[in-house]
Picture 1 (tube, rainbow, N blue to C red):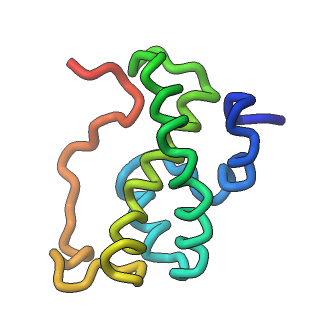
Picture 2 (picture 1 turned 135 degrees about the horizontal axis):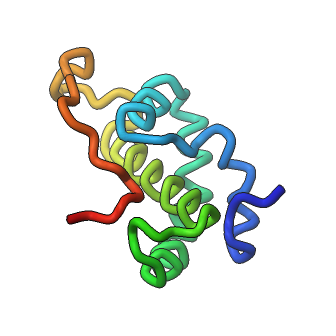
Amino acid sequence: MTTLPPDFADLERFVPDWVHADAPARMAKRQGSTIADIKAFYQAMLPRGEAVLACLRGHQLGDLPAEVETLLRLMLMLAEVAPAVEWYDDPAVYDGFPVGRICYTRLISDTGAQA
């Protein structure tokens, strides 16, 4: 079963491991992955970024078809891992705020309409 728009079928292999429901889950995935796995995902996604964004621009948050929502979640994961690749070469963001101290008091939907 395809979970992405047809133009993005080449990214389908990343859906099971890299699509997560929210920011805490994406952060946990980044921190629990090897830098080699993160780089493989990043290197596959980055060249497709402009096309993904063009597709996303054609839709409204809160009214995303399931395949486009999955594509958005892949792009959000790219944003999560980019600093690990581009700045740190490490899944952890060292010299930053201690991850164990992050406590979300309110999560905003990644895909819901924004007021």
